[in-house]
Image (cartoon, rainbow, N blue to C red; front, top):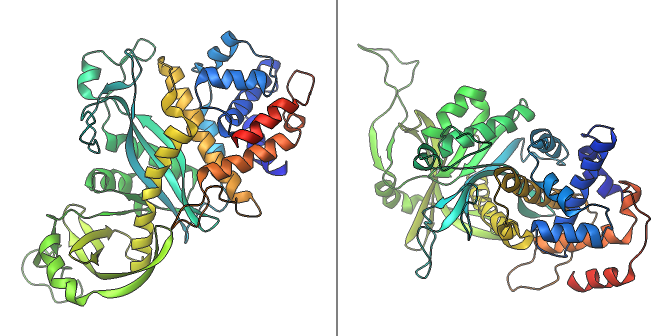
Length: 444
């Protein structure tokens, strides 16, 4: 019970002590509980059914739907509170932030933030331009019980310029200003940087975000605390380091770049014979990889970067980082951990069930995704605070770590085995429903 109290008490205490404030705080806590427990998907109607049947909360349909669509929920303060209760968020003295975007396919018209978005991962039998929401999000990469996890930190809906100019996007009767995905990413990262003052941020992202459009404004905003770790495009030209600045200066200004050495693709073939073996923790296993690293100048970022070529048979991939203090093992391991943001999207959309949401109103859509992402983050914080690792229920060949569903099952068992309403009281008479307890044990 102490773990659950530590999780939800800071959120509960953010609301005023008035009757209305405590009612909203109670709804917030028990809605998050309803999403986390292994009972049903996160549709708003299912959440209401869980509150009324499982927790016996005295709330009507109109009141709950008004709460879920409220524009006054203090999400900014709630998220800052969640960030601060994350235990040991740093990895080797820095925050590892994963950055990416995902699409959330929907059916039906007049759904907020929906448009025909290009899906680069669409299969042959899928539409390349599905009707979906496009979401830019960031998450904290963190080792929890010896496995990498991604804790959602923030998100923003991306709206295409043509939809905004056509008046198809309306929030409270107004069209929002257009912002690129990079501008949205900068806004979210600056919020995290302000919450973790004097802490270095290392953003791990793919090659689409890993460019000067993100690097330059972030360096202007928080200075040299910001660093990038990304994949290098094969056609990027690399340059040698500039001459020694202490050397005797000739005519003209000093050179900022050394000689042009070639593209990442052309240099990969020449460095393959010089690659060295490294042992790295990659995708849940300790693996031996062949890699070669060297420091170059990159004109696209206008700074020096460490480039690591990783070789496997006839294939290779080039990674780069602006943090020259990182070792080859750290670069490979942390970029491999970036995949956890992709698996986090699956946990969010399928395990928690945010993709099943049928809300259409802008505030209801935004609140629902806030609830789902915050529930996912609280679930991982709960796993980190457990004394022992959750037991994996379904054994899978080659996987030795527990799954997200195993953490939710442990959460459900703890929450249902104790009187949770003693910490966060609700206006009803406590009553143990043995039939519901049995059903919960079955679905868990």
